[in-house]
Length: 315
Ligand code: COA
Image (cartoon, rainbow, N blue to C red):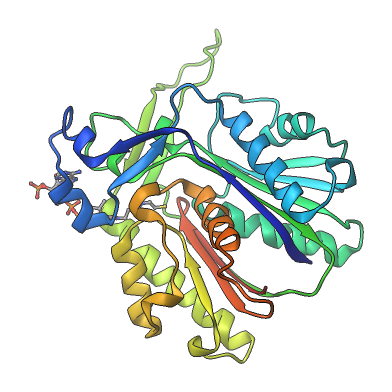
């Protein structure tokens, strides 16, 4: 398969670090050097599904195919207002597609996992055109009185349309269960029979543990990916890393010993929009005309679970 079109949508509300410091004990002086984030796009009156539909339509237009030509939709999402139906089915109706659709929740690594699932569909031979859409609203998961978490995130939707080709050169995926490091719990409806104690817990994060996992997992995923393809880091043109923290990006860049120009970033004015980070960044690079045909591009992300993954593709 190959990526033939991309699209993305951000919420209109922009929240700066200075705006956060109006109601939180924080500051731009703390947030920016520690994370690389100066502002983020935050959902206000938008609905996530509408953003996902718009991002999908943009990706379809970029690929030059109709929604009716799609054979599958994979939506990567951690949380949205619906428990059911799945977001992919809402998107399917919104864009006017009729194909099967499935949601996956692989936290911030969701776009890479969705690509790997799509690749296996192509290898099975039953799809021609696939839409992957990552739609995330992590700002609805955090406690906005908790300065350790809410300052990191932003919302958004990013999509990619896949068509036949041999541009995907390989994946390297990993998972290491560490469910106490990054999690959110929400209560379900009570029943007359529930006797266990249950409570809503907003997003909890052991920041330094997540930082260490992120660097280790992504460095190892990329190293394995390059080795499997008999490549050196210097052979790769661009590495698009999950936009969680500029210091994480820099640490991985130093490990790979590659120049900053190879690492496009948008974290400064986007923050971490979970699995939407990768396709939003991909779309921004694509629309700027950054990639030339034949460029070797690595996408790499990590997230709660922990899960992580990297993919090598030829543009
Ligand atoms: N503003 C001001 N002070 C803050 C703050 C904020 N927004 N957030 C935390 N602090 C304070 C802490 O309370 C702590 O104060 P104390 O020493 O008085 O207790 C101090 O800053 C240091 O906190 P610490 O958590 O050790 O900071 P850190 O250097 O590890 O940076 C993160 C915190 C969250 C930025 C960093 O750990 C990180 O980015 N981790 C990875 C997170 C991530 O990627 N999550 C998403 C994964 S998909």
